[in-house]
Image (tube, rainbow, N blue to C red; front, side):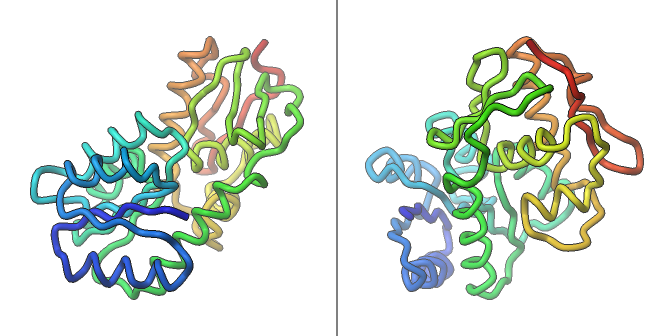
Length: 229
């Protein structure tokens, strides 16, 4: 997979790039957000690794621009900013994963492998899912509601797949986290919150309602059966 790495710390960026190259990825390094966007325009990467604080501005701004240009791109934040608000801001900007520094390169490689698996053709079922008004296209890695492309990120697609497979059922946070990130026994909904909010917004823009994706207090989320047109 082609990847852009944006980190103002050149030494850190080289460590990341070398680990990813050894795992078979083709990489381009950038020291600033502007350089990362320029490299992406020329390189058209499948994923990007972004430092949350770049020399010319926040990585969140770069993530939003990358996501706007290439909705299916995988985005991993790496940062020493590991407060809950920092992590949530990263996910709200379009991140698929967030890794706190310092980290072992093998951990980042494992996260990228998981991201690549989620972005593969097996991410969503090829046949329409009945009862919730959604259709999934495995080849295009896209989800549609009322015939409109929701322009979902890989994580949003994985979340929708997990819920659409069991419409009407209240799915615990731990169940969805395991299906999407392969994290076992993680009952917290923090990782899901921003993505679910984005999915609701996209469904609403396509003619759906917030009630389609219900929050089940102290449990998780449920996709309403029989929703949609």
